[in-house]
Image 1 (cartoon, rainbow, N blue to C red):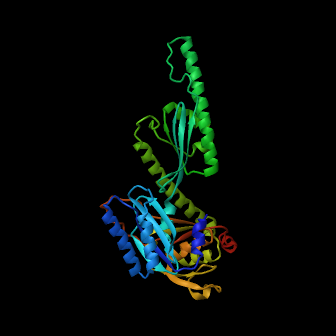
Image 2 (image 1 turned 120 degrees about the vertical axis):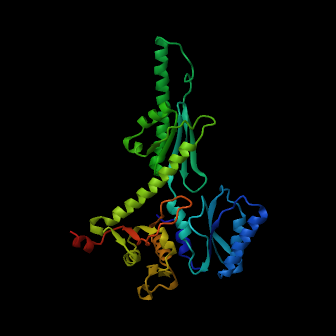
Image 3 (image 1 turned 90 degrees about the vertical axis):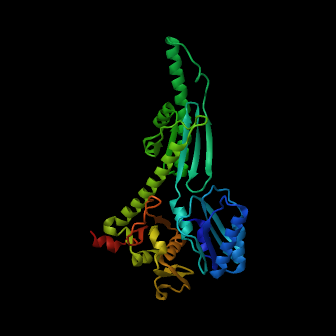
Length: 381
């Protein structure tokens, strides 16, 4: 679903000044100031009023506590910063600085599209640390520590009957602790709908925790063979597993959108600029999928100040005012947000730093629809 703040901003009259730049780095202060000054000067050269450019320059001077590298999206209007969001990691594409009747939103939507919510569970026989994370934010959404019973867990007994009894007692204690952890994990899965659960920690604790989860919950678990809850433990394996799971979730989400759009002989979706535009005009789009290369495509559409929000020419405006002719990708994404549709951007798989960019045509936009066109469905039957 759409971000309510973005819906409110996109529905508000402009003009708007937009900046997509690197976040604060580790350069000397004088160099950081020069970079911010350059942003202000380039914004003014692009037609931005001085008060907007100065407001953005001032916002960029405020560090957002994200590690370097990071990316930052700032929108200003009438001399006031209306949106300022930072994301962990390098920019997804070139800097974008501009001024016009509608704000430039695709850099922001590109980062939001890549964001994945997930759980991290680092467990041991006496409890667990649980974190709810969203990739790109650089901070934990929520965390909890489960402290189970520890009486007798580390006590060593000699062999014989007493040793066997102790082992049973300890095993029951570990199982009880992991049942507490599983209850907390189950609650978070039900409430937060994470894409996956990254599980690391003591081997036996992991086994007991997995056994305590339901079959559906187990399908979300990505088990990492590393005891990261131990003091001074290395988190490299856990971090790598999380990165791989985020990438696979992104691929899976895009496959699902394409599959849904292709259902019922294609009546569940729309493909191509004209068809997707028409579907957005009818507020039928549930998820809009754009090729990342479309962000640099020179095709254009009209952005409107009221429904249907987007048009190929003025005859389709249905009485709404034309705000501007903007790139097709911006126009489609704006209409999607304003009609409560999800926007996904499909970027190329990362390659080696020195590898040339693969040459290919820009893929057509695709939309999975809220409801199928009955006529189309009947034609395909």
